[in-house]
Image (cartoon, rainbow over all chains, first blue to last red; front, side):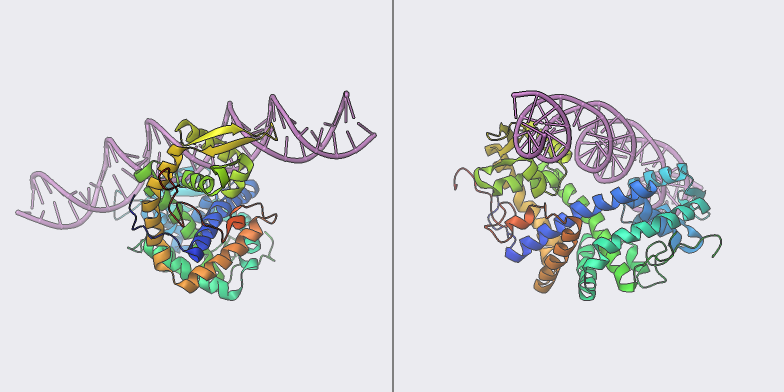
Length: 180
Length: 180
DNA sequence: CAACGATGGTTACAGGTGCAACTATTTGCT
DNA sequence: AGCAAATAGTTGCACCTGTAACCATCGTTG
């Protein structure tokens, strides 16, 4: 073993273990709440929310993968499940025969609208309500740095949508047939 | 759907999506590196590191679960795998016949010592090196708040070990037979 | 000291994910 | 045009995890 390893200093180890604990506990809590209340995975919720945000509620699979920080095989399977449940539908892409488009159905919008309030409630409970405004700002910068290091090509979509109209089901209600 | 839902405000949504992205990307990166270089899951690494830190390198299964923020079924299976690979061994608990103790073997220490440098290298690359001292401090406080909200009974062990001698394989080298 | 609830741990089951291999297009190069 | 390399997506395989049900043991209470 190399002895030039730079070990984590005092404060660094605490912060790292804290982040690791959050990464273990938060996803479980989110998945648990959503599957119980809406029969949705947290990742499925993210997928629906991403689609709801985009024009025509339709986008390419690759872009959807980027927008949810997922691998292509993963999003492919999730999309298959969501289509089976009628929440989305796959369509042809005019300009590229290899590509497939994914479109949020009415049923999918309803599902998202139905699942959002309780989900946001949990997010508020464990995130918004326990952090100060400064901490929210600090965390944004911290995550940007880490993401930038993990994803140097900025493949991730989320960044693109920062500061826009906001993500339905997250920062505002989901538009439904009635109020669209 | 309740219309008294408190949606995420501008800054809040950005921070939340940032944290979500980190929770999607970081574990994958960590698992990928560790399985490739050491045939270990990140969670298995954490388990070994937790055991290495404790007196006699032996502890109860329940405490090990708390120390790694894991459920009992999960740690039970991981322990079974690690025992199969000879990295730990299960032993009787003198004071409680229901309980089982888990002990890190010599082979387990060697494995941890071998895996640590490259793993710490990745942690430095995507965490330590991209954050300032202030951000490290900020993140520690932020994670404490979130964890406190997710785990009100403070079941989590990590807290107990904050500021101690440090976790072998993380904040210092793993003691081996030679230098023990 | 008997019985019942609580606790420690394991396992069957169902479901999600990464990796690698594979097919179908498209793009670039000559 | 023609061919090689890159890209879009799907799927088989292996593996990991949560939930729930289950057994064993402890502790408390009457």
